[in-house]
Amino acid sequence: MTDRRLTPANSRVALAGFATQGQTVVEPVTACVCVSVADLRAAPDGARDRQLLHGELFDVLERHDGWAFGQSQKDGYVGYLSEADIGAAQTATHMISVRATHLYPTDDFKSEAVASLSFGSRVHVVDERRKFMEVEGGLYVPKPHIRPIDRPFTDPVTIAQLLFGTPYLWGGNSAFGIDCSGLVQAGLLACGIPCLRDSDLQMALGAAAQGDYQRGDLIFWKGHVAMCVDSEVLIHANAYHMAVTYEPIAKAIARIAAQGDGSVIAHQRL
Image 1 (cartoon, one colour):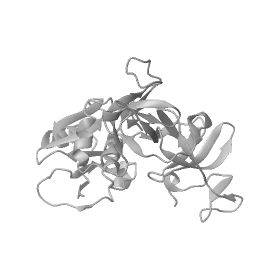
Image 2 (cartoon, rainbow, N blue to C red):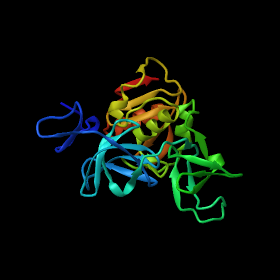
Image 3 (cartoon, rainbow, N blue to C red):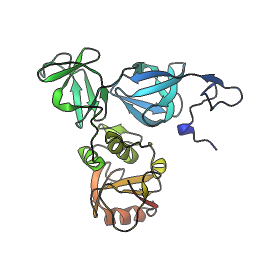
């Protein structure tokens, strides 16, 4: 049985190699997210599955009734974006490297910001000013808030800690709202480590670990994942606290079991 989340095909079109009877084989046309955060949906007007951030690339297979069907380049996730949320493809040069920032119409912090961008958003720098970088579209971002794409971070836990306190949002991928697997993915992708989006898919990361927990280890329950800060503390986005929080590992394991969500099903080391 194919996994809808990773299968670039709907009832009308399909990427080469995925077509079945009645589907038209199409070539993808790459687009770019042009809003702060775009909801990737399971169906047109359907529920949010995941989110894509400003500057992320999306391979469009079909445009139909105001919706673009396609596949996210960062992780292969398939779904529908509003056509209003995407524009022409751009090659990013930098990423937002702080929890969040603003885009300004001029290189003046007193000017009225036109948009807010989350950590992980991508921009194409075209010019450098004293305190700002000019990005594609004639907007400006503070220099201390960006980092070249070719300079990945080295510690996924540090990225998770950067997002401490972020409100919990099921399917969320940004500093404005994030869920458990979104937090793990944000940390790993920022460090140049490939990572799929949902917790069941993330269980294939690394290798099964034995014994004590170590910094960077991933702990999985059915439908949930957390990252170890050290041998005794984890960090996770969770609906119990409705935020990204620290929690003692033993306490979290006991609490999750007590609330009826089962025991740990995997312990992976990257």
